[in-house]
Image (cartoon, rainbow, N blue to C red; front, top):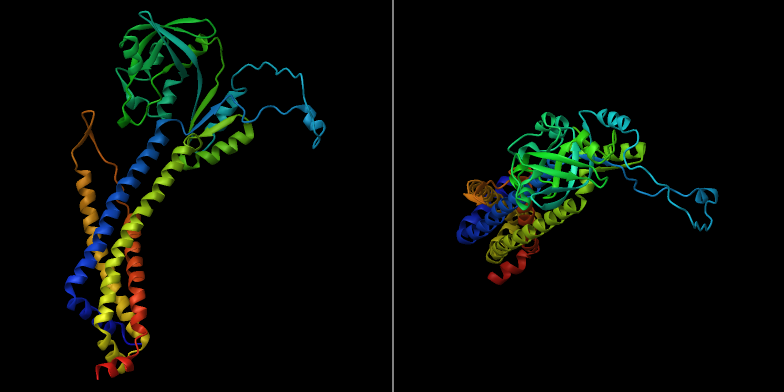
Length: 418
């Protein structure tokens, strides 16, 4: 096989002679790579930003006083494998709440870097100025809950810690306050299903701001844990544990391990968001399918250029073969042509894609009067994928005409020319 520099020189000579075709093929690759970087940067960046919001918006693991499966009847254990029919069984009345929750809380806090807090949640009604609204009232430990989720970032008019100074305080959402005609400092009447009535003062409002990264729903309210226990007539009872772990990606494994130990439902953020995460995977597949189609179209320019070169250089190919160049040498010449176009196109595409990403990051966009910053991904991975795609499409597009060039019979061409 001839030296690589010799074959590269021949390839470059072919490309220089066909400057216009080379430029068209190179621009095609550059546009494909550039728009790949721009589109994938937006989609991957928005995916990562959305996942970060999922992770920060709520505790990584939530433990509820529920079992994934009902209690197994003793008759089924007494007759394993038999056809057993159980009739007339009256389910035992159970007091809802997490049994032995202090030990569970200590077990959760034993995870490396974990933060855990108890909570009591239940349905209640709020009354104000003749209006009544149903809410999900969450009794929390304000010192710990603020470290578990980004509640503080969504509060206006007050802080979570204000609940400690005012045990009769309550935090509700702004849409709920607007529907009731209430404002900061107003006193509401809370009524629980147990018939307990409690007057509660609005200390802060939860702003439904997507930029803050936290929002639980319009009909959500927060109060002090011991106040909720009094309101629901459930002293010393909690029905949820909220856990934040050091590594959010390990939350699912931690939840399964603790659930196997304690039996209650330990639900990780991955499990709660399973459908959304699957949707993001499907969106990523669609992205790469579309980009693959763009790169395929760009490769047609390389294929056309190399095919034209083979057709125009048949006499030159015959001369090269007569001079001792092997079929493999000839094939390598045209493969190098496609590879050079791919390399130059990728380099131009990197510059174009970087410029597009920079323009998108500076785009003056607003949502409801607030500036919107588009989350963009500019990681090395995206550039490597784009470069590999351009190299792969270039080699595949050049391989077919290069293989045809290698099969040229120099004797037939020279005889025809004579």
